[in-house]
Image 1 (spheres, chains in turn cyan, yellow):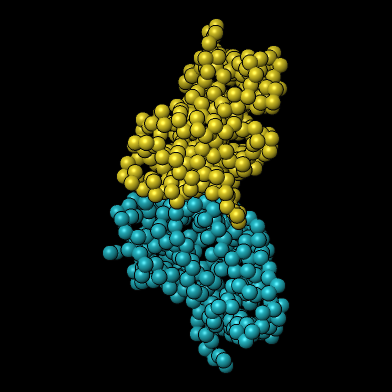
Image 2 (cartoon, one colour):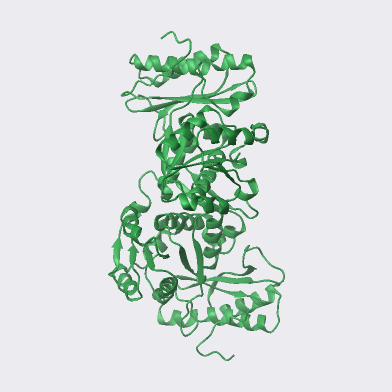
Length: 295
Length: 295
């Protein structure tokens, strides 16, 4: 099957109609595809008969116009990569197709899920933008399963909440964060790092790994674990926005880690904002593998 | 086919699965069914193979706890009436089924659509409650068509906007307001009017009809038309919340009626709040029929 590019919801629905007897797997992205996205497309291909990718740089989830402007757009290369891993349909709408004149609807998720971490830094409107565009994409594609990367851990929690609350009939699948050999989480923003910044950025996975090691050795106090991360990031001179340990489901602050916790952080390396996270689960040892790990 | 009562979304979906080859028509209600609701169920029956009714007094769209408390609940009689007009499935969930612990999602429609008329009096949270519950119900039932009464004109506009914006795959059908012989729009709240209040309430359709007559005679100035309504309502001593003429689609204020306009009002008769409206369309004469009309 040749890969099919569609620009409107009407075309998308007509294209998918004959495929609804099988299972449709959907990977929503903002394009600038990297190995992390491709791993989501492969996961979708392994579990479904039809794979749909969306490419849409959603303006409503950017608080900062410069960040939106700088976001990489590489559609031709994205389509070639997607075709290579067996994607069947690419939905690449214009902003006018997604937000036509008169558009007035917002889907919001309230409470700790959106007030903390990224919500605290980027403002709640960031997750309003995410929840609204994901709801629209899920209702446009109507997939059986939708795939998200664990790097955007809070996004996964917010999307799951929204899907459960609104009863959108889809299974949300979170796939492990894809990492380069030095442990850095793959991100479309990494392309904007200079060689020197890239070396500094490797302190992010190293610091998270240090906290994982301490956790594996029995340390359960969130303050001691975040202190290790702060120290590792400071050592590389990175500008820290937050380093927090919260309940992995409710995103509420924790005083002790008796159940799965999310250790999440955001830093700035030069002009580039990076986020990363690991789950600290008393039952599972899932440490980041680092190229030159001393462990 | 016997009427089937279901209490959960899971039961509902399982029940509807075999009917998806045909067309599903859906009538969402807060129960206390009257002839207006039955006319919606009949319209759904005429155009679809399966008719689904929901009965759910949605707490999130009531600003006033006393109003919520006083809202009539007559489930057994509702099911009997619905069965009589050929309803196949009744979805009557509990509040806990619709809003389980941890529920955190709101669907909002912004701008003039929700800031004016009912939104101005009841607060924007009223339409947040409406948009959220209607989105949930539409996604739970997944009907081909959903039927709403024109009496709640603003609700129809808000629901259409939300369905268009989120790309919910359903056709929204607005049915004409059902009226008693004296012209009073049928409403579950009418049951709470005393005989004397009921007589006073007939000033509502009489006043709207007076404005329709003036409009038909060529008067296009919204102020002159609303003045007629104010006068008619004042003559009956009714407590007026608003009487407004707005664009029928955008709900923006008008200075002249060159395209379809909505003349909408809310009054209080004793403890009971009533709303009503007519469309003033330069192309269509659709005047309310009154029992003792002198026209």
